[in-house]
Image (cartoon, rainbow, N blue to C red; front, side, top):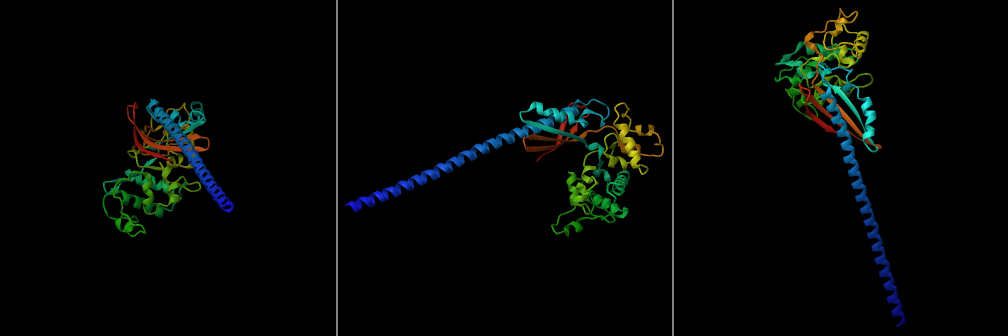
Length: 324
């Protein structure tokens, strides 16, 4: 009897230990699940807050563009100088802030205007060639011509190969085949599909800015001389030099100077020998790229959108939107 009682006590002890082990395991797992749920809820809350901070910065950019009532657009205006607004943004958020950048698409070369019908638009072709062979890209003349021909073939509606360009057969023979678009580009990243456009050429490498910062899919072909980056400014005329570019840039950044006339550059000393076609330049822009980055601690979220400012300057239209 004593042996049986001892055995029963041993079995009971084992059962108790097993139950305790199961309860302990379940308690630990429940604790983990609870903490995981709390962390996920906190992360979701932080993510939503971060999104709203970035969106707030984006809407500030829209407001700045609508508030601009000048008859011209220039780098002297508030929308082009958002550093102070970015610094002051932390006053409006608990432990958060945003960085705002506004870029004028009108200061870039409208690549879709390279083609007129199934042929070239000569002023845009020459502008692209000067850009590609200039000091920022330094392509050989032959390589630059082939690249421009390939871009033309990608955009024009026919299947006839232009010089060193490429059409359907070339793209069909690639490792991952696709067809030539034979239509205007919808986004500038499409250039990466064009023959001869490498990531380094598109995004830039070293002191080269990359095609992504020089070209746009928007616009009527005219370049805003008041806002064009120096590398685009350099390509506006064959006679332009680095010194001339610096003089132009210094003049257009001085708020005291009149910038409402696109031919203001002719007033500068030694500018008589520079001939920029009047049909190629303007001082008014309507499409802008707005980038707002929201910050909270080490976390960040970027919103990039392209907006069109209506001629009345009372409303804007969103053309594209990307969250990173």
